[in-house]
Length: 564
Image: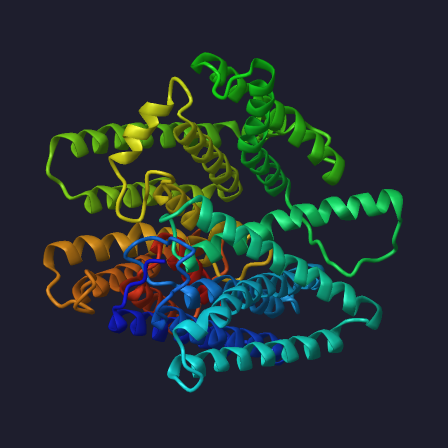
């Protein structure tokens, strides 16, 4: 595993992450005290484990992580639990006004413990790997042994905290079932992170893989929970359940179903190719037949299989494609004009920036930041005037990106090579030949805060967290730092004090301009300026210090802080 031994940079990242965690923990009401203490214990366990991993000689060499990045265990293990706890704080704050939020609160409470258990499972897995190999590099009384002992203590205290929380809030009959439920999520996350680190070597750090694994298990585990609940109602009717599944909007159902369908396409295609090879006695089919099999797989999964699942689990009686058309033409003027505007911006920016990348000596980092500005131009008007339509558009864009990446990786004719050449024009050191993640991280960084703000939301800037932090803050920090930066945060890093100051200032100014505009559009303003200043500053410092994929972590951290 590649480890960067820049102690100054890593210590700066750890300090900012701990400040972020403690800021969230100190904002909880008394009813969520045990949740906050669990988050603090999880953070300390991740901190000691990260130090042990980066100071060890073996450094978990079985996993080949992204070169030039630290392990990122602390940031990866605390981001999603902090986001869920911030959302819990927000919903509990507005519960007194919206009494129907009790179901949402119970659902978010279970999501918090689920993602926390997923991260804890991964920490236990890496702790086991270190403990079994420490005899080769760690004496019983050395500093690394003390760090592992501290990790054990924090994890033990976390489990005791979790036990008290569940015994106080859970009926005795459901306690064992809930614990088994959380353990299953932790085990699934451990299996998935191993798969990601082995199948995609040099594509992600441990922290990045942990973020992706825990997020995917949480998202698609929700689908599995809904499916099992539906089956239990059919075969073993129950009056109540120990798991609150929450409610989903129709847009969320469509995105969830079709997204899972696209992720199943490579599995379905691989199985089809194996059957094809067995029948034809050949390992690789001809190019045209391979293309036919690929698009047939997409049609079978996305057009037939997933709509059938949606109809069974969610009683979604309309085909998703017909529902999307009906939704778009429900307000044809505004939404079709918005679609036309998006198409024009995309065509102009893609043609212009791709031409610049081929004909000029413009630094690739600046070319990439231009796309961040394009995201601001595209998403801010839609977020203010067509918020629900933007939810659907984000999902559609994610599915298009996923489909293009599958075509690129599998080299599907005729677009495979074309897509590969175009994507390579904007890659950087965080991308690899196996997997290009920059466009995914930018899109998800903008979309996730918007999706998570659905339902109860008394912080009007929270949905803008990704657009503000990436489209404005990160872009200004990179451009000003590249052109005018002199004072570096560390000797080994490239981030500058001038760039960070520009990023923080630009986000602050954008918030100052955006809040009155939101007020004129009907939003009720309840954002405190002191809390907003802390959120902007901490997210800016995290962008300056982290060696992880900032497009993935910064929007989530900023969103979490804006919810407080």
